[in-house]
Amino acid sequence: MKLLPVDEARARMLAEVPAAGVERVALAQASGRVLAEDVAAARDQPPFHASAMDGYAVRSADGAATLKVVGESAAGTGYAGVLRAGEAVRIFTGAALPEGADAVVIQEDATRGGDSVIVPETPAGKHVRPAGGDFRAGQALLAAGARLDPWRVSLGAAAGRADLVVARRPRVALFSTGEEIVEAPASPGPFQIYDSGSPALSAMIAGWGGEVSRARPVRDDLDATVEALRAADGELVVTIGGASVGDHDLVRKAGAALGLELKVASVNVRPGKPTFFGRLADGRLMLGLPGNPASAFVCAELFLRPILARWQGADPAPRTLAARLEEDLPANGSREHWMRAKLTFSDGGVSVRPFRDQDSSLVSVFAAADGLLGRQAEAPAAAAGDVVDVLPLSRLFSGA
Image (cartoon, rainbow, N blue to C red; front, side, top):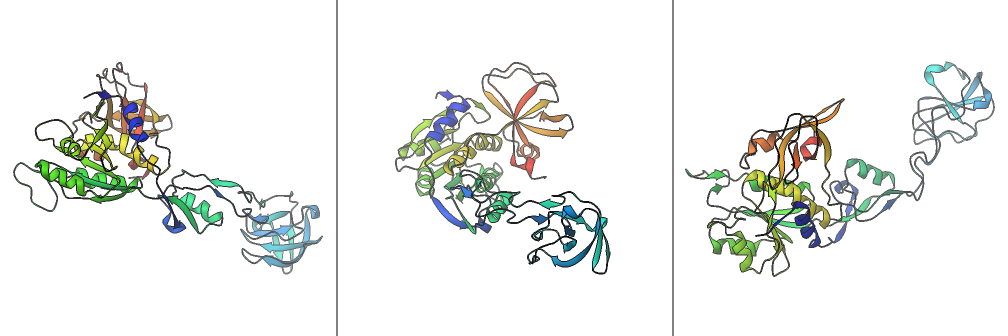
């Protein structure tokens, strides 16, 4: 099997990914989806000059003076009159400035006495949010391809939208293979382990915008694997385990039985060399991930996440950040290596320390990691303080 570099393997995969359809969803259901339309503002925000503080709306031309309080402007119920010389209006944060006013004196700087208030000289524009200060009517606020989050949903709401057109979620069928795995709460046999790969991959797929259906693990039997693959209800079928070419690795053979045309046979990456990708005769795409959890999870970050992003019209390029090594690293071997690592943020920037044990079967190490430290094939030895590329995991931004 030809070992493809990671970038080339990913490019071949992405070339096969179709554009998703679209659907309209209510704003409250839009977070986590990928926007499929540009969103522009329906009107200025704010649509009027507004007070930034509680206090008194005044005319700057009146200077320091004792003014007559002629009314009140609160958020949602403005003062209808026109402010004239020698007058002030009691005003609250977010309320519209009355016509004629051009400044706000905060209440701490004013001295109220009955129907009058003593104010200091105040320049025009003081404590005033100008009309359109956030955005103007017709201004582009969100672009197609943006992944929506609560803050972007808020911007859509401020633009006057009750719903948004988003990419349809790609349907992903997921199953794992192997006589050695059993699904909790079943009791494992003496030579079995619990399936930790498919629950994690299921959560990853959902978090990346896919609509996942998860089947039970499949035993090492070619007919059973073929049937599971045939029955997998998804535009993309993701398998875990059985991806290599050993006697008990049957997923490729099952794919071949259903007309699998390989686009990527294996990848020059550590961990995850057996990863493959192709198209079945019925048009479904198929991504075969290795069975060891770390291998599957690393390759999900490198390949599955970009595939789902492209499917939904989002930027598929992995987003890396620069970090300084906390310790020396030896020269890398012939495969690109993505090491589970711990990131530290300080005033001096970002530093990274790879875990010492990178065995691909260790679930506990991945659970403690918040990034993947990337090293190119044949990279020379690196010293503490050198800058390296790190692919941050979602956990890094969750505060967990």
